Length: 131
Image (cartoon, rainbow, N blue to C red; front, side):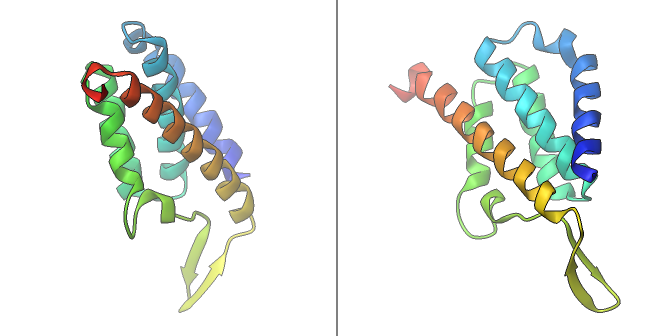
């Protein structure tokens, strides 16, 4: 259920950001949309560190920064990276437990995380600096 709420939030924010995205390439617009969805999903679960990272990437994309895709890709490497993140965890009364919607949240996270990686790699690899 929380997954769907985050997705709705993101769709709403993307509509208001359309004016910003019009100057972007189609690849950058696609990445912007996916990263916006990620940010909303993360914030919806209270995950501020990675949500703030996504917000910085969104800002770079909106400003036409050529290193935006590489900024996103840096989140994926090493211990404690974005790849390691799992949503839907609750620690209350001294006990760790998974929330009922954890499976749905993490399925959505995995799909968005994978799509963002693919788009960012394609953008980075297509840039003149990558050649």
